Image 1: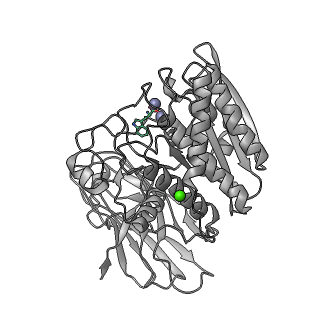
Image 2: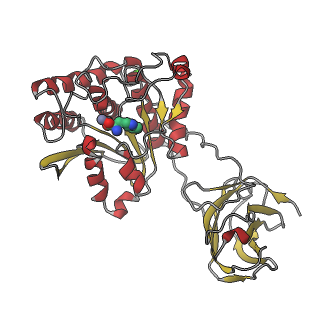
Image 3: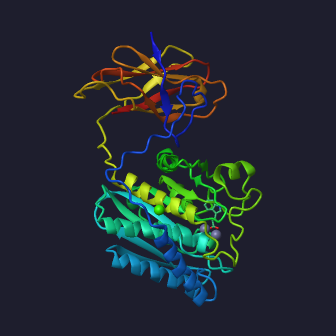
Length: 434
Ligand code: DTR
Ligand code: CA
Ligand code: ZN
Ligand code: ZN
């Protein structure tokens, strides 16, 4: 009987050791934007940086948490957004004995159950004005938000923007925001995009690789420019995307580099100076408006707009029907295969190329188990092969099967066989999502 391949396991779930037949994960193509994203005038972004520089100069040379320069920075950004029609909220918190501020700006409209969020920290370190770190990200997000207003954009999703306080003290502001966001509200955030240092003077083009779809949007944008990107490898936990990721929200973002040194290979593809830090003024007093590469700031600001337009206006298809069987089925130890069936009805045409197979099998030493999806015509699709090295318990996972050659309606079966002695278990439930 034919056994079809082309099965992938959803990222972020329990990963059985043997995925011999899983197709390599490919970042899905970016959804087509309904409206073309605008160019973000880099002059406008730099004008915000000039304002932030003036604020720092007038307030002891920095815009750090707890200092006057930070509150003045928040007031500047808030005034721009209020004038542009945003619903703004100042969220206060206390850290190191000082009041901190997060600024949240909601663009009226869009599906409140599908929120696309972008953010950046607005605070600097105490040793300097923090124009690249992170005036650059703050100004890029601000100008994108203003472009949304200028365009009168009516996105499918609800757009929300955030400027975080006290990032330099340990992601304090963004942690406070996420920790105080009810679970029901967290679940509405389809993605959070983070921009922390996007104008480094010796720039790299790094894309967060935490979520393939969000990563894919940015990679698509830069490939359209003919600019190669690298995945952001040092950032896990090092900026404001971390609190969002820690509660299961999909995250993405861009980064132009900090105190790490640009290699000669990187200089060959990006220009700039090999053997020198991406930003040699990182956390220093020289992080001023002179510490910006205009091309990087421009490209990254345009990429922010592209992501907001692409992800914010893409039509997300409504979820299809689900067919589930929750009856327990005992799996004989080292014995014959057993099956559990679902009857699919009223689904026109063929099954999709991304048929989701959710399984919940309770079994010690899951390496004993072989799982197949059997289509109504008898074609078997291998979901999981056995493994002598996967001693963990249970298979609770979602597989994606290319079942586009199968008629959807009919009796589908999950076939499970325990092929090694000792350790037993049962099918707890399984389901097909179209
Ligand atoms: N922690 C950020 C700068 C930073 C350093 N590495 C990364 C990686 C990804 C994003 C940001 C960063 C700061 O000093 O604000
Ligand atoms: Ca631009
Ligand atoms: Zn910093
Ligand atoms: Zn930063």
